[in-house]
Length: 204
Image: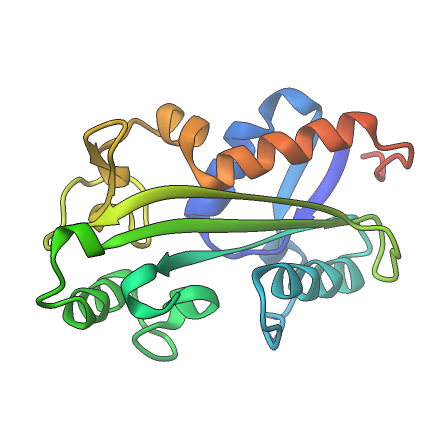
């Protein structure tokens, strides 16, 4: 069994990562299990922030570290909230507050201009100074609704309408979401890279 520390304290993300990577003989533990402090996300892109978080987790845990930086990119808002998605309504804001701000910013914007996408960047470092991290990226196209629908998922899922499924991300069954989503597809690509990776991860 190979061990990886996951650079997040978000239980929703932990569940999704474990579900998608369940068949890869990996033991994935959240960074809270190692008392890893939160990394300062000073990057200007999703990839930069994922690398910062993975490096911080690897440094404090002594294990290979996997980090994701993801967010919502809304065309009518010039790409906002983007890398600031988790704190769009301010430091410590919860999902409801972030969604409320998003809907307020999009007030009056017609449906055809409410196009958006979730973006995910993953970074896996074998150690803190790893010069060749594994990077995986994916996106998920959708439209922002004017009201919340569904009780599954987290974050902006209740207002992210998926045209191919005719429902929001929060109305999808978890297994379906993991197959379609930005994070699920980025994880699948990362898993393929791990299978080809010549450098073994730490054994448990």
